[in-house]
Structure formats: C-alpha cells, structure tokens
Length: 340
Image 1 (tube, rainbow, N blue to C red):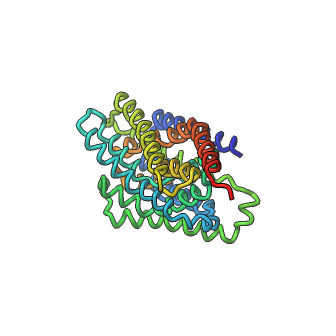
Image 2 (image 1 turned 135 degrees about the horizontal axis):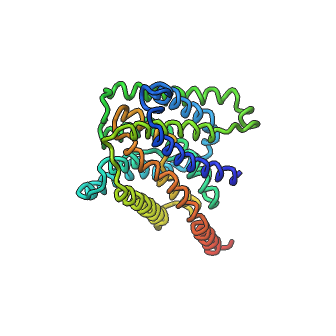
Image 3 (image 1 turned 90 degrees about the vertical axis):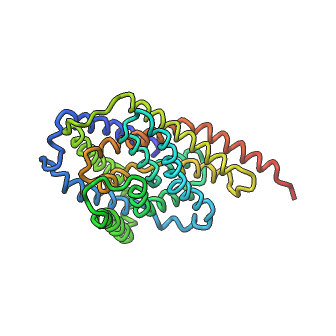
C-alpha cells in the first residue's frame, strides 16, 4: 500500500512538470474562453469534483476516538492556521526589501494560510509509528476548518486581487467547496460499506483534476507576455521554502518536547508533520477562486507547488531519524518507570 502511495506521488510530481510544459507549448488551449472553457470546467466543475471526492473519502466516523486529546489538537490547529501565517507575514516584511519577485513573495504568504493536507502528514506519521489517530483527526478537521479560515486569512493578509466582490467569492466558495463536501459526506454514509470493500482511487481522481487546474492556471501565465519570472527569484524561493520547513519542524519539536508539555513522543511525531504540512489539493482551488482573473495567479501559486513535493521529500528523508528518536525516547520512558 505504501509503495502504491509513493508511486502515485511520484506520478503526480511528474504530472505537474508535464502540465506546466504543455501550458508553455500551447497556452491558448487552457486560457479563459479557450477550447477547455476553464471559467466553467475548472472554476466550478473541477473544484466541486475535488471537494465532493474529499467528502466521499474523509473517514470522519473514525475521528471520535481522537477527540479526547484536546490540547494536542489545539496546538496543531493554532500553529498551522495562526502562528504559521503570522510568522510568514513578519518574515516577508524583511524579504520585501530584496529583489525577489513580489508575486512569489505573496505566494509564500498563501502557503502560510493553507490548511494541513489530508494524506501526507498521516502517511509520514504512520511511517514513523507516531500517533496516527491524532494525525488523521487534525488533517481532516484542519481541512474542514480551512474551508472557512483559509479564505479569510488570504483576504486578511493579501486582500482580493480580483474584481470579484467578497460576497461573490464566499458564495462561490460555499457552492463549489462546502456544498460538494457535505454532499460527499452524506453519500458516504449510504455507500460506506461499498467504499471500504472496493476502495476507489480517490487520490488518483483528485490528482488528475488538480493537474487540469494547474495546467489552465499556467496557460493564463504563458499567454500573458507581460509576466517574466527570473530564475534567481525561483532558486531563492526554493531555498526559503526548505529553510522554513526545517525551521518550523524544529520549532514544533522543541515546543512539544518541553518539560511538562504533556505530549508523548508519538504525539510529537504527529505534531511535527501536521503542524508544518500544507494542502495543495485544497489550496490551488481556493486560490483559483479568491484570485479569480488575476494575471499573476500562476506566480502566486508557484510557492505552493514547490512546498507540496518539498514537504513529502523532506519528511521522507527525516523518517528514519525521527523514528530512531521516538523509539529511544519511548525506551527511556519505560526504563525510568518505577516497578511495583
């Protein structure tokens, strides 16, 4: 199962490169008004499909067992949806005086505003042997919470750069995000046994639709001759993203392993991954709605497109180290317990 998941992620990363390359070769196909009609097929149908798919796949009925650890959940949600975007905003005040492309910097802020992903944090937590139930709960709950909180954060930190009124933005979010998600959950109740038995390829469906959204987004970019992205800015953004991920992983580790923190080593593993991972599947559709019609939308999306594979690669590399730490810490706890 883990090999299939890894193969799917590798396929998706290759797909991102192919989608961007195809958009570069023939951008006229995916621009607004073009043959694909992305103003309808992407803005409404594709986004709704992703969230209906999420509603079908989210196993919310299994989350009740994890509800009792309220302190752990509060730590993760406050870190990822409050501390993370605020810290990025402060950091960007320093970077604003540099020569880095301003739209890539705005894209970094959007990364900070994103909710946790549904899958990657859970997969890595499970690979280490951490608190999988807590990872599942916070990934699912964070996704639901992000539907409301993420658009508010985007508008708070960046404002809406589109000509669409705020009321229209939230009404579209409601119709293409909330409604399909709720319908997906309702349908799941009636076909849960069939879903568990057949195990439909939810990840493949969402990834395929997401590639279509990425393709049309970059078609808009390459069809605009006024947009120019310098390689120096791109390399710096890549370095900054990896540095931010490592710094925040270290920060969550320090906070969660303090004396009297109340967290077990297994909890710390879930905290490290759930607090620092960001969702591409939920993020790109939301950016497409909030920044509808903006000529620099694709540049704003670039940091999130980089952050997603970077968090998976970095997490995978660190799995043996974190697992070794957790096992040694758990052995230490057992040895120090008094015998009766």
